[in-house]
Image (tube, rainbow over all chains, first blue to last red; front, side, top):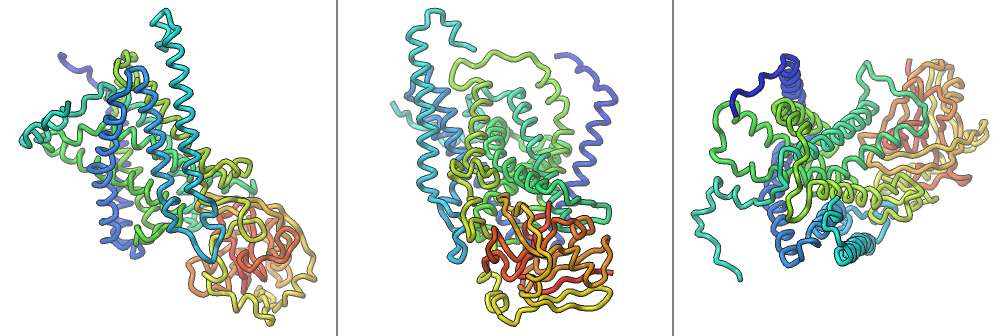
Length: 154
Length: 385
């Protein structure tokens, strides 16, 4: 790599504008958080730190580790499909957890969280993994009958 | 087959980043995920801002009363897009995860500012997504701050730090998006495969939840926090009469509605209201939490009540609930909504008197407004000068 191509003035100005507007907007939000009495600051800061550290140091490493361990023993052709299915499962689980715990249920309001979420979650998992099994079966069959290895790539 | 872990001294951040072996991580992947994520954040921010502005209108803001179901679209989109962000954000953060362990943490002042703004961006994104999920699941105890204002201010932090981030990374993004596609790594997911998996996750989450506002999908949205078919009179409720503490006042046989305007005050009993000309309108009730359902409401037109006390058509109308302690006790109808012939003081829902939890003896129902502003258990209507 020698000299980098110099950026056009338009790009430079676009970058400056983006950063300037961004800093203003984020500053507006920060001032709002700091001054709005209905945002209790210690609780807000504690919650923000918890989700940040919890995600970066616990949830994501755990997900990477689980994905690596669970797909370790799979044949190479099956790995991507299972990794994809694990991603779908994990994302759906994040959405489902508060519903499964059901803390939002209200005795005086039967329309709040009205469904059987345990059953619903299991049905969703069953659908995800049935589709995964079908895709794997299809891949296995195509692999067995494939004569031209280039055909598998798409 | 299990090897002993390397000595702990190897856990130096600079070495730690070498543990991440996926060759899938690349500026191309990150830029593509970032583009999708940026679009989703933009949709959430704009729809969220619209909802905020309807409830706290700045002077320049105008919100029409038609189309009747516009707010249910913008708010349904807000929640559906917010949920779709879950797999996008997860994949995006995964794609840059090793960079967290870059050493030294700051090369110089500019680099330090960049990394701090990144910290702000990631924290704000995680904050918005998780508080949104907790809110639609009605689980408030982990938050212990007022969700509405915290979510609003953090949206500005998120969008601001995102714009600054795009500004900083623009050359890399440009180069990555215009670069020819690299051949996929042989092991594990391809880039296209990962994007397909993210798409599948978005689809799965959407189908599992969007039935809370798309009635035809209500039967298969097994993880919808609401079912538009479930509730008193087949319609969901967000706040019951018991929770609002209005049961006694609302069922008092001596109930009278007060209507105040330039020509004085009317006190109307429920029988007198029922004797006025009645109109029926099919209008959605739309919650800020993303669920919505259409129902047939019958009652007196607000504009007729305004005329009865000598008010003009272009007036603001303030509606007050019997409820004593709620930030949504009072709601003001802007002229487009106050004058709209579809805006009713509803006495009936689907041909039956309103259930207590739907606002008996009478409630406001107007086209294209958030549910929190459709005041229940109405005590007083004032035509503002």
